[in-house]
Length: 336
Image (cartoon, rainbow, N blue to C red; front, side):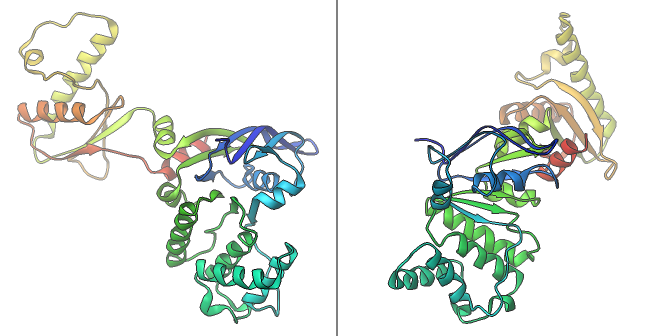
């Protein structure tokens, strides 16, 4: 099955300025793909290129396996801009009916389509309200219904959660999940990274027109985070815990240097499968907490390390992985 969205060396220039530089993007059918980047990174330019509203300076766009044309973009894509124009003196049902007419729908089909879309986005009770009197969240839902009028397989949503209150954001997330269940492919840009992690199959981070990293949320997190961190809280005798951990650090350094370990009692007691400890980090907010930087660890290695510490008499009250949020990773990446 071909990807729903594919770009090949896609580039867009504005004079001498390169807004998008050699972008290779693949979004599989039925996915929700989160496109992340600071202002000016090239997100909106990418969405407009995919929607056929801009012509690429070079490169190619393919939609549902087909080379993009003006006709295919209009037929296959529903585009929701970051700011939707409000049509004064139009009621909600009239707004959707107008765009259904633009796609050449007959009267009976238009009536059925408007009814179904209002039900889908939860605006049935507002069908006779004037568009300009809707709240920001309701206007966003109406704009999404507009993008769905011709039932496209691909949806491009530019900052759909911008300016929404917490309740409206939750409603938007649920609506996106419903669209995925309907088989739609969704590409959305957003700065609300924690919410992307909850609803997206994959994410991509773009910076200065270049794709920095792309993949599943967990894959991206692992690539950006580098070494893993374990968080341990001790009840008492922090020095004892640090002494045991530093011994493991020294053993890891010897192993890296190729030195043979001498058979000490400590080594004989050490369980198999311990991860190498790279660094200990003090938590400035809690003197009882030690952050342990190590390589990627699985649950067996975590269990072995915890068993080792307990055998040394270290009283551990909390122990687990320290996972950086997407916001922290994004800020660290784009601060360079």
